[in-house]
Image (cartoon, rainbow, N blue to C red; front, side, top):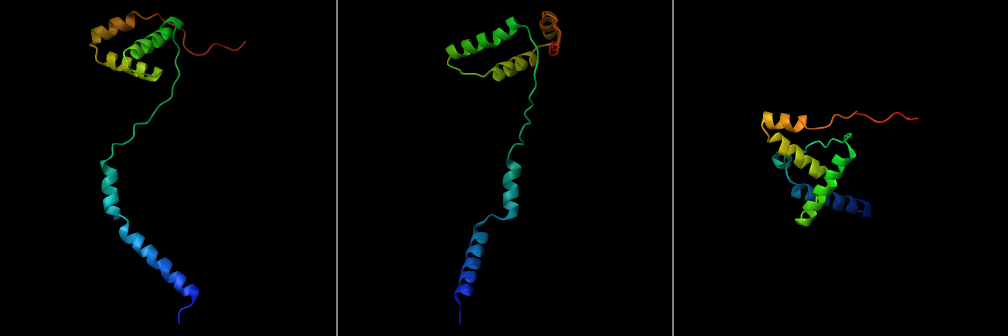
Length: 110
């Protein structure tokens, strides 16, 4: 004789077994995960630059917008880094030598 409790427990067990059979094997799941590229860690940082150079970022963003490309400030900076990385040592030295030296850090509180 089957009681309501026993029937309910048997039904739950049957559902769990069915779900377990449909679930992918752990080896298959691990194989799928290993194919993905590892995430690149994102780093937040701050920097100091003269106002006229900072304004150049907005100007470059406007040029990109006119060309039909909406970019963020960080994308402009990353593109600039990529361009610098493609330069020869002499070109890079010339570009860095042309920069104005500025005092880094935050101003002292009064």
